[in-house]
Amino acid sequence: FLAVSLGMPFVLGSKLQLAATRDISYSAVPAAAGPEVRQTYVAGTYGATISFELPWKLQGRALGGYDESRYLPLAGSDQSLTTPSEHGYTVAAILLRHLGRHLSLGGIMRFLNRASPIANRRYSDRIYGVTGEMTF
Image (tube, rainbow, N blue to C red; front, side, top):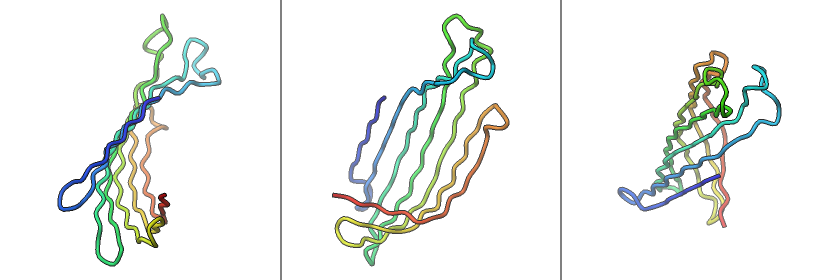
């Protein structure tokens, strides 16, 4: 597992945060294709968030991200049996209202698109909801 996060001041008083994570997930059950195939994959997520303060104790955030899942073949197995890589992206907008120094509440709109060469693993999703943040 590897996780890196970097925050810095950005344009016109805004803040930029860059984040990257990489992890390997191992399957606990055998694959449907047979014992010579495993469902182990390397997952990577990379993103950027820009935060900016607004009047009336509001904070706006815009974020974008990219993720990828790359399946790993067994050593010596038929490479054509390995599931192809999948990838996706996320874009979102968040509006928060500061309720003191440590608590913020607001709303989020997020769009997620995940592409896969396998038809039933491809999807798009829109999320609208309430979000919050507690800091210490």
